[in-house]
Image (cartoon, rainbow, N blue to C red; front, side):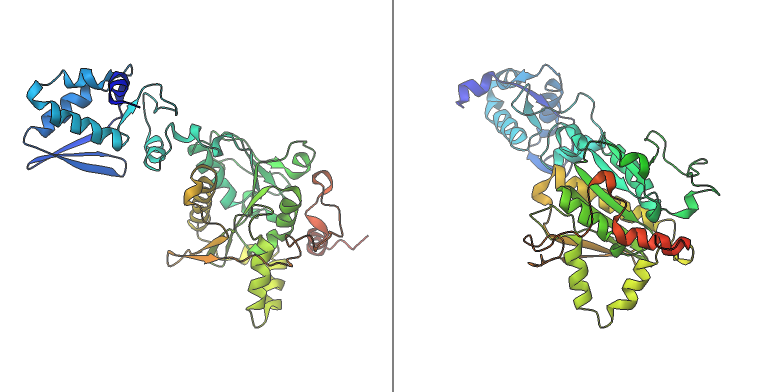
Length: 375
């Protein structure tokens, strides 16, 4: 575009902070800041940016006309700097513009290069299903709603229930602040599985056991080609990921197989995983632990859907929730993974959504826990 055409484009200034300093002014917005030099820079920036706050916008030529001709070069340099920093933006440009009234979330999206706030991202439009009614899902559904996600469903799958959220019967006790306001109530698994639509993303959650308790949901998500994120809290450790993109990334089974290969005696650990539901009332859990893992999981989904250039493929985040320490692990795909490996695996049971009850192994575990013999 030529300078002449650019001079006729109407521009609008986004809300910005001006901080006068010796010899100039600091202009800042979000994580962006720069110094405009000059004794009159603070006053010039204030006048220029005030004029450009009009939602209808103002042209660069009109901005220059606000100042004496002798200041034209300095004004043009300031306008160019504000445009380069995306603080002075075209009105009705090719991309979505910032709303008239911005939130901190809108500024966060702008800082990472997305104009228009969360509404401009994919997560807001993606149907997300969170499996499990527990402290993780309770915080995630609230954080996702606060972050702009409009279609989030929590599914109460019995084996992933935190029993402290239930009364004497089979219905959850969500009174007294046990469930966040402004979000939909959890849906029983029996009702959800009768639905026809598939989610765009699925999150498996458990706040009393390790990731192995989610392996059948990982299998289901891979078979149905659904993005899947496992999130667990187990004995003071949170694990988020790996986020599974079927056919493209390692799956949860890849992580578990490699973990088993590096354990001297994996059998005892897997035995504990298998009985995690029965042992949850003696599991160590501080009220802050599940929300910490949940918030990290929401940010993982946000990176994946709205800021893919920041997302790291094939990684899992391990959180020491007592020491508040975080480590990121690389998860490598296993060529002959029984779930996602190159078509080597054929499921021995039906994994269609309408008939899926967590897989045979989950049914067997429930029978063992309830004392019901095999049919």
